[in-house]
Image (cartoon, rainbow, N blue to C red; front, side, top):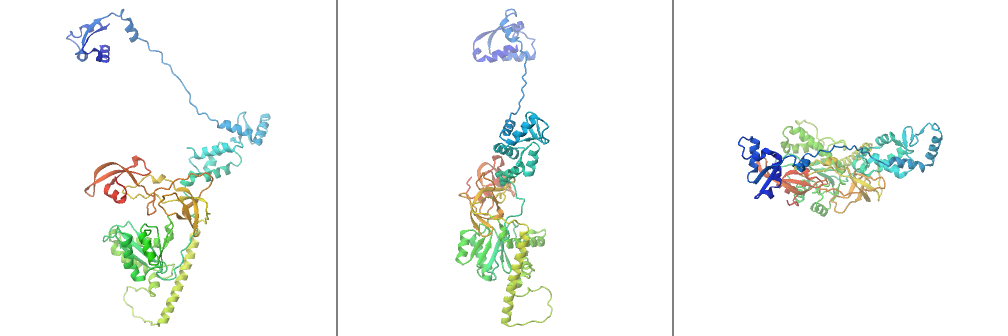
Length: 563
């Protein structure tokens, strides 16, 4: 019955609406529709046959030879095929061929063929030449280079260092001078030079800034950001006199423009100390803005920015930032939002504290007297000197101040140079450039920077700037200053060049990623409010690395992006 159902189903388009005959060797099927006592399975089959105009007839097995032959066709004996897969290589053949061009090894083989015990170092088994159990490679530079490339760049080699690579190769093969060849090959590997960190002291000896000639003639400045809001302020602007080390700490609130900061400078610094001759700062986008540079240029003040990615240029202000942060952290304790109430005290504390570099306090050097001590008044004598004597003492104090600063600079230079490497590069050299880790200006942190290259390039040196800075020939369109401290550079070794483009760099110098497109949208909740979130795909990332970002925050951070 099942065979009949399958046949009718197969040919249904041709059988519907016409009378047809079913011939079967199953005689009982003739009475299927008339039989009342049928099983549930048979009832189901009969139902499927309804709608067809058919007539079932019986054909004996003797006359049903063709159908029986097809239905009873014996299954052939199942065979099996056994195949062996193997990797064929011509390395051994090429190594054997290298012996033919090596006169020394050729003589060794001839001696061993005549007398197998002729040498205590070499062994010949009729096919391979070995030395102390290791395969000997002849004088074939191309073959040796391919072997070095396999053991270094292959999946097994994994760009290992010199020692690990020598250990791995020496267990299998060897040739005269292999250790030197391995060392040179590893040193010249472009991938290793770009992706491995340095194990040496930072390059470049310390170059102290010149000591200012007058008080508040040269200042340094920086921002302390990332603070919790206190009195509606979340930034501290630190300004330091490079001669007396006297500092002013001014609270600001994001966002602020170069024009607003310049106005704050005039109201807080200019009115007290006048306009400086020189300003040392980092490459903050505000300090590098056209308005800021044009304003101070008109006032006769020179801007001295640090080299790219080298904040140590303004190490004095960076050190003050750490001291200030430590003071506020200790004083505010579990209430960090109260730092605004302690800022003026922090400034007084710093300016009245003893500094080893000037052997006194910034307050005393600026005002020529000891800072007032906040203790009950003690009766004592009062010395009154003439104006001339006062001025002489003032000049002597300034000379002593410069002497202490020079001595402190020499001491710091000696200590710093112990942990540094003197490095001198020449114009025309190719160097790799080290950039900061990925700094993503977004809610979510990116996860791909861990495996990003440590070095980029190589790039050509076009000029030397000072003692420890160099001007590089960067690709067109690079949004980064081309002058770098030598500690951010590494000389390219070898002839092979695999130069690449610089990543996208933000105005603050950090490598950043930018949104490419919006993959999806949804309504989410932030701080109890409904906000629009978008699934963002980023540059140099896979689509599966896309992250959900708040739409209005994304538009604020990337105003040029229009989703």
